Image (cartoon, rainbow, N blue to C red; front, side, top):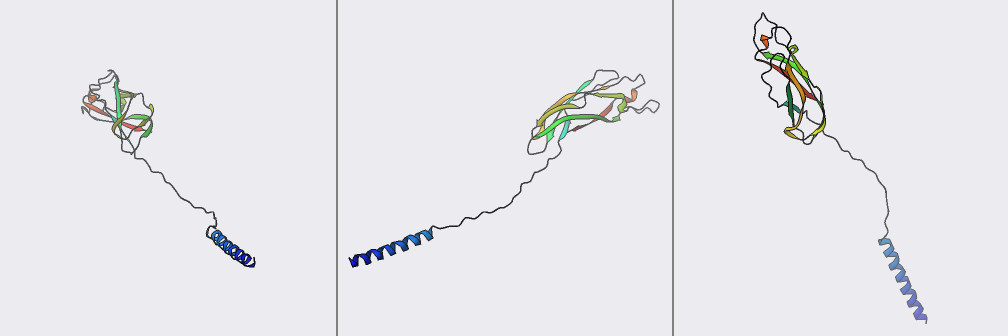
Length: 159
């Protein structure tokens, strides 16, 4: 029996060493950490408001001509447009009779500005649409011959 006890003790010691070595092989430590990162936004390029309605043949006291148009959006995605506004910016051409009053923006009326759209304008040229403004040549009760063959220029903005 003595031999068996030594054998049992040797086997038990060997087994204990194997278990201890196995436990060491599977042991690990945990640790926390932190870090940081960032993300940035891009920007947009201004869109262009186009007038697509052709307005010709205005005459003193005549009917108002409707104005309408679309947009050129050079951005990669849609742009939200709240409204389109217009102002009469200048008059060119026309007769040049110095004895008559000059043809100016005061000879014209622009109505319906601003037009509220509250819409997304997709990316691309000639996209989206706007309408609702008019322009006409007023009857000022003065000689307006200098407004014959004149062009009134309209400046559009969007926001």
